[in-house]
Image (cartoon, rainbow, N blue to C red; front, side, top):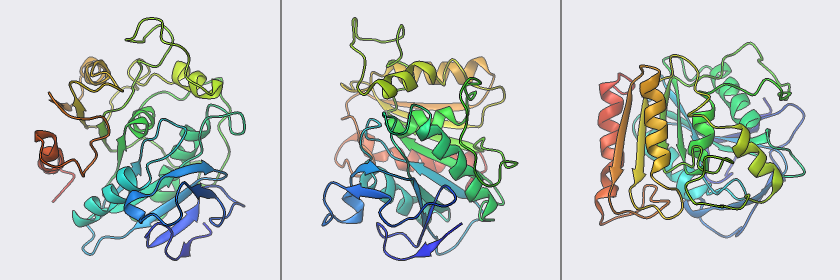
Length: 288
C-alpha cells in the first residue's frame, strides 16, 4: 500500500489511499508549525490514511473522520486527538485526510476516499474483530454515508481490494449536518446553496437519513441542542432513521454546548460524552 513510517501528524504509519499516489505533498496545512493535535488541513491533492497503534490492541479498529465543512479538515482536534483517545482504549485508529468536493475532485471524492479507506484497513488485518467509524461535524455526515446507499448514477473510483465491504460495524457520530444542507430539507428558510457547487451537489445527493441501508450498525449520536451551526434537527433525523430500520441507536443531546466540542471542551456537561461513549461501546460489545 506504499506505507511509510515517519512523523506525519504524529502518526505511526501513513500511506496513500489510492494506488500510484504518494504521501509526500499529498496535502497542505494552514500552519506547518502547529502541533499535530491542532493541525488544520487546507488542501488535499490525494487522500492519506494515518495509522495510530495502541499499546494493547483489542483486535478492533476505528476510522476517524474529522470535520471542517468539506472545505478544510480539522485533522488535529477531530482527528489526531480522537485517534489517541481510541488507541488508549485498545483500538488501532486511522485518521483519513480525504479530498474535498470541489471543481478539481467532484462531489463523490470524500465518500470514495472513505470507502477505500475502509477496504484498506480491513485488508491490513488489524480489524479482525470489527471496524467502526468515528465522525465529527462534516466527518459525521461522511461516516453516516458509509451506512447509506451509494448513488447508483455515480462512478466510484476504482482501487485495490474491491471485494472488501465498506459497511462499518459501528458508528459514532457527533454534531454532523446529516441532511439540513440538502435542497428542500433545510431548517433555515431560503438558505442559499453552499459553495462550491460540488459541495452543495454532494449534500443534495447524499442524505444518509433518507438513504440508510437495511440493518444499519449500532450508532452512538451526540449533539448540542443549541448548536448555531448544525441544528439539532440533524440528530433527530439520524436517530429516527435508525428507528425506522429497527436498529439500535443511542442519542445524547446536551442543552448548552458549542459546535465542534470535540474532546477538548472542558468545564461543560458535554465534556463527559467520551465517557458515555466508552460505556456504550462496552454495552454493545465493541470494547472489552
